[in-house]
Amino acid sequence: MHHMADNLRLGVIGLGLRTSLAVAAHQPERGFEVAALCDPDPAASARARERIGAEGIDEVDDHRKLLTRSDLDAVIVMTPDDTHEAIAIDCLRAGKAVYLEKPMAITVESADAILRAAYETGTRLYVGHNMRHMGVVRTMRDAIARGDIGEPRTIWVRHFVSYGGDYYFKDWHAERDRTTGLLLQKGAHDLDVVHWLAGGFTRRVSAFGDLMVYGGLPRRPEGTPRPDGWLKEFDWPPTSRRDLNHRVEVEDVSVMNMQLDNGVIAAYQQCHFSPDYFRNYTVIGTEGRLENFGDGPGDLVKVWNTGPTGYRADADIAYRVPDAVGSHGGADGAIMAEFARFVRDGGATDTSPVAARMSVAAGYMATLSLRDGGTPLDVPPLDPELAAYFDRGQVR
Image (cartoon, rainbow, N blue to C red):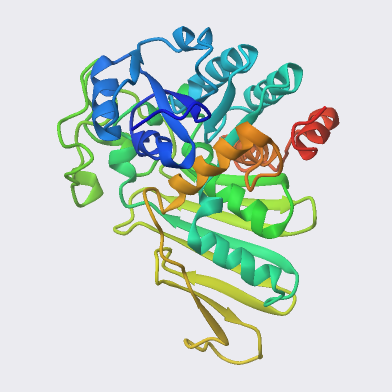
């Protein structure tokens, strides 16, 4: 396709499990295209280039080779979480706008260092909290905004992760120094949605968790590749799984309680050995309750706002979740379009680096709490100067 001179040109760093996002980033007809791919493994770049299916995309093995190129407007960082801080800061300092896949970092300190680099350089930073673009989340948020349940006062989330043993315990996700833990790594999505639906950020947490099932299963020797088909063939029951990562040190069950800065009380529960994959949200307000039944297109968000009665399966209102287009719950295309617009024009976005930091902070402090017997811990406040900068849409 003819390269329009005014198309935004993107470099993609890290081409693992989220390569669908690199594909979504190449939409020349919508004004943005992938110009370069970067991964230490050339085979990963080659596979990604094939999936994108475009001519003239460069491939490099080190992100620093992208930073001096005047023909790249922005970079998308999808490398493992523990590398986000160093790579994002390099890119921001080089003046390349950054799209950072969540979680943005694996500690509060690291998240704050990224925000500070964006503030000091004035380079635009965008963190892709894709669940904000998911139909079920939008449907719940719209119902709350309409006043269907009054003012939200408590939110309960249950997250059943059927593929957890395969997705998180067979590679680097199982190592604490690379993720902190799955309450942060996997929970950052849901914690952000809790904050978005509640209209506040977590200020205090207490959590319990344990490594119940995957701690004693057979592991691969260090340096051995993941088995073929590791994300296509799944074993059942969970105790029959083999070939786990050589180090397994993150919890496979965790529960956390949160007190938000606006008084909302929330709970988040995560299990990595359930038979089904599902998120269940319940939001109770001063005048009603809503809950999602499924999170795919055509599934329902139900509202009960008359009563008191016994349980009524039909509810008072039922909203259908709109049909999704594209990968990752339909969010990838929408996110990339928003990122491209933000790089070009600035302005407000549905995701915010501050919100991304606050979800990392909630998950991080909860992990410290659960490893300390449930001790309640306060979330460290964000430097007000940084908060104000991002609230203004990254304008000095």
